Amino acid sequence: MLAIKTLAPKAVIFRRIVRLMGDQFEISVVGNNPGWADERIDDAIAEINRVEKLLSTFSDDSAVNEINRNAGIGPVKTNAEIFKLIDRSLQISALTHGAFDITYYAAEKDSDNTPVITTTKKAVSRVNYQSVVLDAKEQTVFLQEKGMRIGFGANSRGYAADRAKYILQMQGVSSGVINAGGDLLTWGLQPDNEPWTIATADPSQKGNSFANINISNMSVATSVDMQKYTATINNKQLNTINPKKGFPVSGIKSVSIVSPSAELADSMASPVMSIGINAGLYLINKLNQLACIIVDDHNRVYTSKDISLNN
Image (cartoon, rainbow, N blue to C red):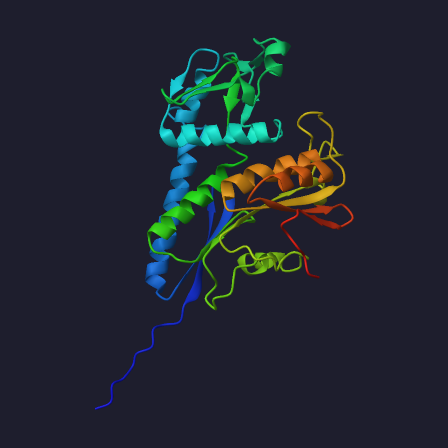
């Protein structure tokens, strides 16, 4: 009697597009069982929603709002997850000399919602990452200046993508892609055992000269000069603004950061955009496990030392 071999179903990419954290996410997992893949994508979505709630400033009882309410008053004990995220954020602020900063100033408001300036200009000028005091032993966060706030708009999507990847890997997903509003996080290999590239992770970027860069087990975050999209307010064109000097940055169309961590890539893209081509390349070239691709307003491509483009 002949034994009949049953071939296992061929692995394919299962994708789902969903709106999360105010942006479009596309979650892709490689597998051969549609039901299993659907459940795993549900797990990733649940984790992203958890991170959004954790870092929200819209809920009165959120840990971030508790820290903000006590600005200039006293330290606030928080959970380990938020404490570590703030600590990492401050380290990136120091690394970029304040070009990346999770702090900002919010004027107090009276009963009819009119801003009331109760802090001197000198105090407002001190509102930056250096005014955040962390106590690792007590796990407390203290914003030294009244009116100070912290927010994670610049790195929350990257952190959420990292967490979703972790959950998927724990659930046995050996290969996949998380596309968070155009920022990419990949792990494993494609179904044909080829590495993920920017083009295969995000087909909309196939036309880019750097689309075939191998990004398996890496993240790519891109910051784009909004002038490209001709956004206008009061008939004035919007540019990327240098946070230190307050006027538009010229010469850079986009910056893409390649890193093992989506949170780190997300955090570094805008600072490199703000400090310019030469300073940005110099900074990235000093750091381990980071690379960047810069496109100027003449579509010339500049890369850090660890990237080689073959056109």
